[in-house]
Image 1 (tube, rainbow, N blue to C red):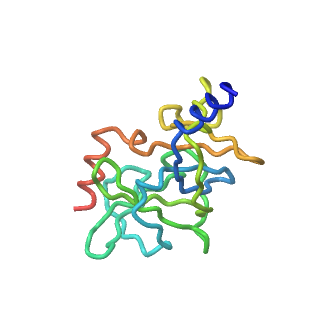
Image 2: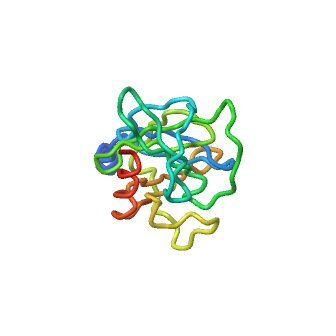
Image 3: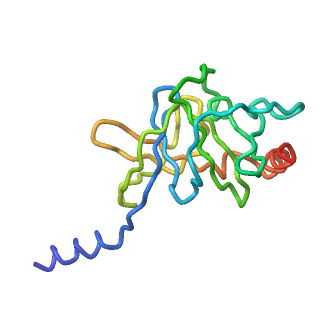
Length: 165
């Protein structure tokens, strides 16, 4: 009986987390829902000269100009044409709004924090390990949890904010 009580106490310590899952190159990724401000369809993006290769340009979102980042390019994935499923996930990254182009948005997932496993020591496939917060084993698939605040260095963030002015 004491074992069951201890197990229940351990289970109650794990907090529930909500993630927005999205797809890139037929793989599933997730970000914390609290960082997501909104998800929008692909608008016309205004190109900005002399920006990093992964910056598609800027958009005006209700009076605020925000940089639009191609996650495919930033994560060294092959280019693909935008289609009717392409979305921009507008997120708060270190206090700045940024839009991230993804192939499609799947769903909001509720998981226990205990389900998040640390990223493997060696990550094959091109995504740098420091971008990963963890891996979640869903019933029939793995979901890679990204930390988009670690995707950009401080200097890169500064140039992105400058691009949107």
